[in-house]
Image (cartoon, rainbow, N blue to C red):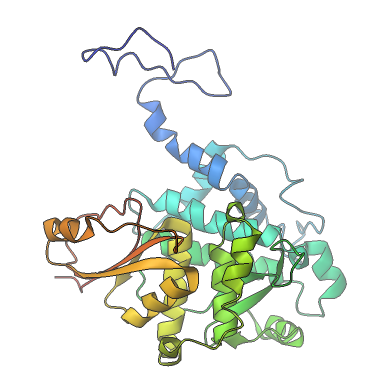
Length: 350
């Protein structure tokens, strides 16, 4: 940015914006607003365009003539933010999008695929070499599954609990938080996993389940940020070996699966919107597992919510703060989360 010394009258007009592609050419002041999505893509999911283009061209599908066994995000040709946004718009076409849909899709699909790229078994060459017949479609089907999850999460509130596949990090010392496996969290495989692929995964010990060790392991793996350090990861993973919390054992299958979807959105977006109610025990389990300070508020009005939130802050014993807001009218305007993670439960349409 450059310009004359700003005064109260000219503070806006003095701003100049530039891009890396055209460092000497100032942009129109309206363009930075439109290019915010490009910043999200570049810094939150730089390889997202590569994955979308690979899927568009069937690079992961062993049944396609375009199948590319050696494909990796690191070696794939660069895809511009402009082209990436066009593909995102295609993916979200026909869905009830909102102002944040594109960014939410980038954050969720980008995080899941980035984690997948770090898991050696998802390399197409490894699948062809080590996975038994029927399993060669694993990456193809998994990325389709994640795409569907991200589409739903970026365009709608959580209204049903569908099975979801998430990755998990190694629990042993010296492994550096390496991704080493996956879990199918739910009572069945995703609907696009055919019988042959299911048998192949069963052969490797992967079954649909909602056991505490597996649920806690995958959610910790999803939520932990490498910047937080391995010491914190090991501390959190100590909870995996512990007995399931009493609250967890009382939850029904659909409630646990709903809890997983809530945490996916909290980890990627910071906010999870639920259509209807949620068992408060689900959020209490998440807060305890992930070391978040929890506050539960029954919505009365925006002013009342703001009043109740005053003074609610994190502390040295927690990684952050989490707020569950219940009984929100469907017509409530957007709630600004600020520094808090928030689970927002909306009543049925009025």
